Image 1 (spheres, rainbow over the protein chains, first blue to last red):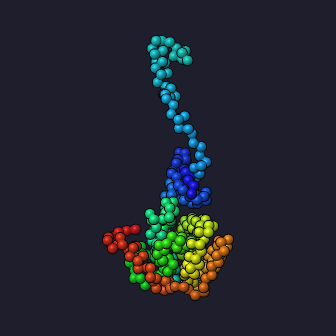
Image 2: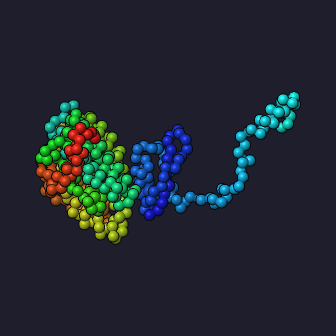
Image 3: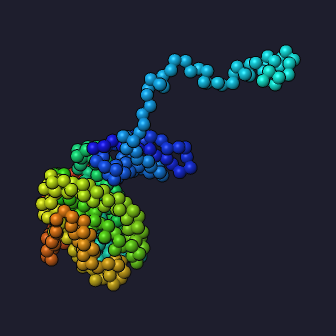
Length: 96
Length: 244
């Protein structure tokens, strides 16, 4: 048996979402079982069935780097700087 | 349209076949050969019960009463539909024989002069294609292995003649009034031709005797029916007001 991952999407809505996985003897049966296992209640209008072997898996350690807070810029620092520049009478855009 | 007695009898027999097969398939809930097959098979069971309900609904306002409240002699199910099949190879073989026949039977009702019946056929055919594909795909893979072949082949040879009962019964009036558009003899020929084409690579040839093997259509029940009927009416025995 091979393992497959199943993805579903509703027309005009969101992107493909992972519905779950299943085991099947081959690709043809995987499609058959995917429909009954994850689509029998019309959960999606489109379905992708992907052999798990075809999925490239990233190194988990690479994903867990220590401090990534500088990648989460929510604009607060810039907004504060502009506010203080304005209150001190400087041209607000000059600093940039 | 007010259905004739012949048309009513045709629908009742078809509905009873669907009720029995749906109920029998459902026996496999949670004990199918593996999880995915369990889900697929019992989802098909539910579809078959849905077909039965649509058909009963054409001839009664009280589906529960018609489905569960008759004397045994008033059921019209084919004996192969009543068969318990508590061995997986039997269940799979009956599924394949039943659904290949069922597709041919629905097709004979497309464009029926009884328009509500034609509409039901149209709706059910979409599901039927999936049921048939499921049965054929699984059988194809099992028959391709020596082990699967040795399990399934004798069961096909034994059960196929019983499935002929799906095509038994008078049809002159039904044809003349346009309730069906394909004679039962022709339906049986189409069904057998499809099966033999499917089995050809696996060296299985089905021969069907001309005499009907069983007489479920005339009101005689098989030995398995009483157990099946006890099971399908178990909830109703506890709560007579329970609904489907």
